[in-house]
Image (cartoon, rainbow, N blue to C red; front, side):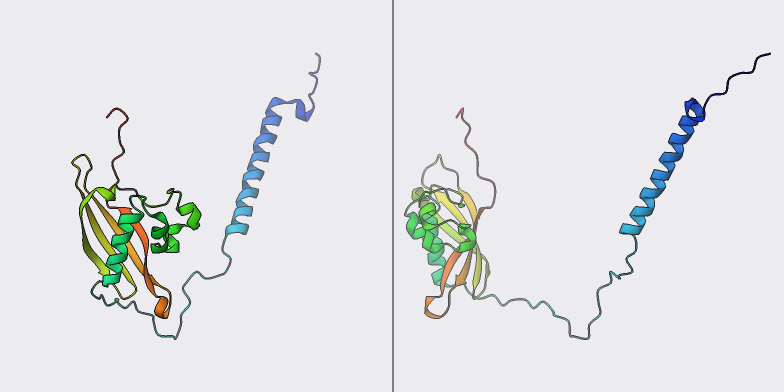
Length: 188
């Protein structure tokens, strides 16, 4: 009777599988310990710290009638920036927030962050005051064209009072259509 030759430990397929699964188990346990240790409880409380200071309550701002100068600035903006006419004048009517860092020279190219509308063809423009405060106003503007092929459009326009003393003036900081403007179809 001959004795079967013994195989070394690592040459056995079963032993290699056993080593693989044991190594995988050690890796998973190591990752879990690391995650718990690194991301686990830091002993810092996430509660809002208590204070003995009185709470700051939101007080509603008092609305005032719309300043005539704000309405005039809105009207000039609609007649200059919106149809891309007299852009140098429209630059002076805009707040830096709406200019988005554009210089006056860049603004005068007409590539500006103001939704276009052919306002030079207007029959009328009506304003509805949504909010009006001493230093800020938000209006809805309905632009109604003369031409039948141009659709009427409603826009939101926001104005802020900037400057100090005698140089205080209204500036347009917001101009957005209430609904997305129609995009012309190439086949029309």
